[in-house]
Amino acid sequence: MSTSLIIPAILLGVSLIALGFTLSRLQASRRQLRILNARRISAQSNTQKRRMELEEVRNRAKLLEDTVSGGTSAVEKVHKAISSTTFGLIDLFSRDEEFRQSARKARETHDQTSKTVYKTVRTTNKALHILAETLFIGKAEKRLVSKKPGGRDSPKTGK
Image (cartoon, rainbow, N blue to C red):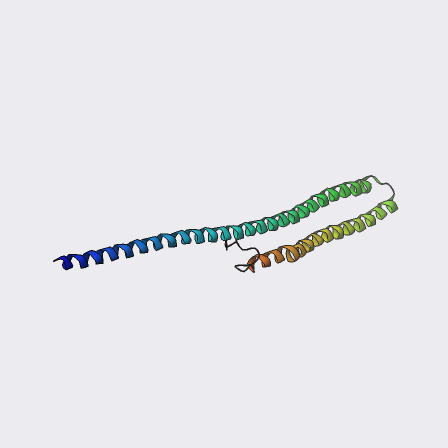
């Protein structure tokens, strides 16, 4: 009768030891999984931070382009108002027809030249924005996209 109790007791003891070992391995695996998950979140956070910084640079560049464009339009309107007033007054109050004709030619030349100048400013502004996008923002975006795990900017593995 003693052997019939000893074998189940041994089996129960071995099962408890195996269960304890399995639980300890499970706990260690969970700990490693939490560490790995924390590193993954950190890496994603760093990547997201770089993406947000890149988006901020892109937004600032667009804001600068819009500001220059809007400022150019405002200056052009004020300039046009001043020149229209000036040439209009010359045309209205001038008594000399030859002077009036000369002022009209000057006004045509002035209006064409100023129109060309403002168009050039807008075109240059757009070209500079495209150049900045290509040289700086495009390169930074390519660097961000091409980051490989384990590279220089990847999170440390602790080993």
